[in-house]
Structures are given as structure tokens and as C-alpha cells.
Length: 217
Image 1 (tube, rainbow, N blue to C red):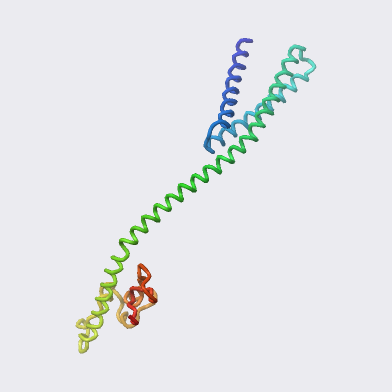
Image 2 (image 1 turned 90 degrees about the vertical axis):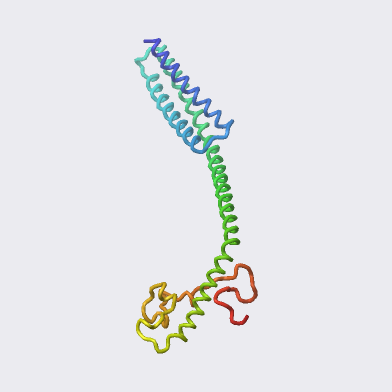
């Protein structure tokens, strides 16, 4: 029975030593906030267990029916548990500071990662805007100019035509607009010719838009 009890104590001591080593490692090495949080929780739980053990040993030591040798053993267990709890509480306080620093460090690292990712995305967009916008805007402006010119041509071609012979604008046909839309475009379905605004890609004088064309040029 005594040997079995000694074996249990030995295992407990090994567990305690392992925790002490991990606590010391937390101060000597850089650990993640998640690992520190788990370690801090374990320290707090172990301290609470030591307090419970001290309370139980104290109650046993004060039992008048206990033999002197057993009283001394119980008192020693109480003192050991008190020391263990006090030491772990101190460790928990300092680990909390280490955890705060780790969270701050990881937040800064995450912010730096996000900054670099945002910068890389921005730089890619700079490249795409510089390469694509002028070409796309030029194509769209050319298309709108052709549609606008064809609208004027239809005005000259349509007189005397009725029904299916009346030629609607290319935009009205392509966009499946309602009848009379060319005359009264609605605010919820504006005309491309009238509604599109395409800024110059670079500063180009007092007029900021490549479309609509500036009549003052």
C-alpha cells in the first residue's frame, strides 16, 4: 500500500516538474498567444487544485483523532500545497503579462501581413489601371461616338417611315428599351450616350472627362 502511494506521489511530482519546466520555457522562448493562453489556464487550474489540497490537508491536520506522525505529514502536505499555489499564482501573474505582449506582437505581425497584402494588391491594380483603363476607355469612347453618329444618321433616314420601318437607335435595340425611350430615357434606365462619364486617365486640361467630349476643345 505504501509503495503504491509513493508511486502516485512520484507521478504527481513528475507532472508538476513538467509544468514548471513549461512555465520557465514560456519566459525563455517566444510562444504563441494560443499556447500561452492554454498554459496560463493550466497554471490557474493547477493552483486551484493545490489550494483544494491545502484545505483538505489542513482539515486533516486539525483532526484531534489523528496520530502525531500523521499530523506532521498532513501539515507538510498543507505547507507544500500552499507554497505550490503561491508560486503558481505568481507565475500566472507574470504569464498574463507575457500573454499580453504575445497578443500585441501577433497583432502587429498580422497588421504587417495585411499591410503588405494590401500594398501588393494596390500595386497590381496600379499596373492594371495603367495598362487597361486607357485602352478600354478608348474602345468604349469609340463605340459611343459611333452610336451617337449613327443616331444622327437615323434622324435623317427615318422621316416618312412608320411602324417596323422606323429605325430605332442601336442602343435602344441592343438594350431592349421600351418604346419612346430614346425621347424620354428614365432615371432608372438612363442613356449610355447621355449618362456615361469617363474621366481622363491623366490630367488633361480644365475638362476632366474624356467622355462626353468637351465642346470647348
